[in-house]
Each structure stands twice: as structure tokens, then as C-alpha cells.
Length: 140
Image (cartoon, rainbow, N blue to C red; front, side):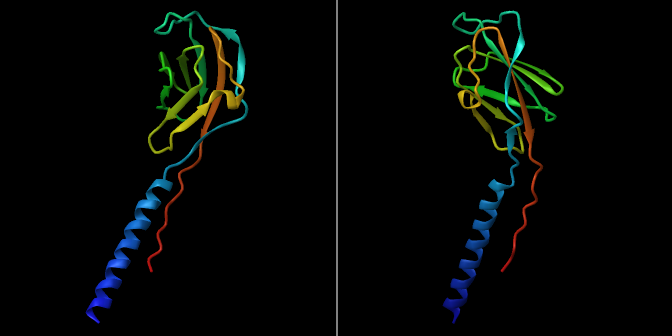
């Protein structure tokens, strides 16, 4: 009888611990691209990457502030303004990753959104964040 009780006790705690660890990953909100990114008709004054090439700019517009960015070739510069970040990347960049605390990282493969970067070009991208969902646990 003691073994059955001990076994049940261990199973209960393991299942409860598992529910907490799997639930914590889903408690992060998700960011997504709003609408279709588009190329602006304006250009910017040349900023050069580490190889001396003139950069391209991705203007990220959102009501969320405090993004951090990364890319495969490295982000050259970020001008952070309220509601708008100007992210300068190499003209041959293919991926932009966006990070924000309390949100899952957003990895954008630029070609999947129709973005083909060229020097001095400005692409406009709108990001929205889903509201944070409450996580409920049901005890047996």
C-alpha cells in the first residue's frame, strides 16, 4: 500500500512539474507582420557596412517599443525612435530577427515577404504583438 501511495505521489508531482514547464513556453506572446511590407519611394544617405558596401534600411513600425535586432550578416546600425526603428543592414541580407522581452523571437526570411534589398533602399515593415494570454493550470 505504501508503494502505491509513493508511486502515485511521484507521478502526480512529475505531471504537475511537466505542466508548468510546458505551459511557461506558451505564455510568451507572439509578434507578427501586419500587412505586406513595401518599398518606400525615398532613399537615405549612404551608410556603409563592414565591407564598404552601402547599406539598405528596413523601417520597422510598431506600437511596441524596445526591439532588439539581429541578422545573418549583422545589423550595422539601429536608429530607435518611438513607434519606428530604422534598421540598417547589408544590401545582401536575407534574414532579420526581432527580439522583445515577453515575446517569442520573430525570424523574418525577407524573400518570403517579397523583400529584395538593394543599397540605399528603404523597406517598410509593420509589426504587431498579440496580447499576452493568461495561462491556467488544472489540478487533478
